[in-house]
Length: 187
Image (cartoon, rainbow, N blue to C red; front, side):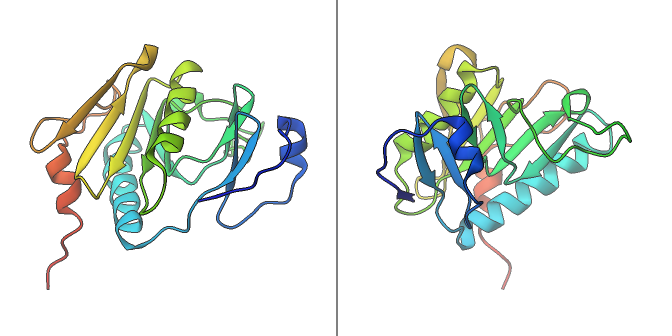
C-alpha cells in the first residue's frame, strides 16, 4: 500500500483526481493506494463473491460487488467485497444499476495483503461501522483469522469452525476454516 504524504485532501478534491490502478481511497483526508492483489487475495475475493451471490442474488436479498468505490462519511473506500441489500442498490431511472454509490455498504469485506498495515484496513472498517455498515470482515490469510466489526465498533476474532456472522437475510453458513480451505487447490 502506497501512502502519498500530501496536504489533507478534501473529498471533493479527491473525486476530481484520475482513477488509479490499483484503486486509491481517501481516509481521514489522506489518499492511500490499495496494494496490487496477489494469489491468495484473488482466490478469497473470488470465492467470497461466488458464495455470497449464489445465495443472496438468487433470492434478491443482496448483491456482493468486487472493488466498488463507495463514498460516504467524508471518505471514499473501495472494499474488496461490498455487499448491499437488494433494496439499497442505487439504480438509474431505467432500472439499471447506477455507476456511483454514494452510500455505505451493508457488509464490507477486506482481505489483508502481505505487507499491508492491518491498522489502516481496520480503520476503514471502523469508519464504515461508524457510518452505518452493519458488518465488516477483515480476512487475514497469514493468521487464518477473520476479525469481525459490528455496530458500535465492537470487534470479535473468528478462527477455525466457529460460524461467521453474515447479514440476517443471507442464508450462508460459513466458518473461517471454510474460507481458508479455499486456498488449497486440488493438484
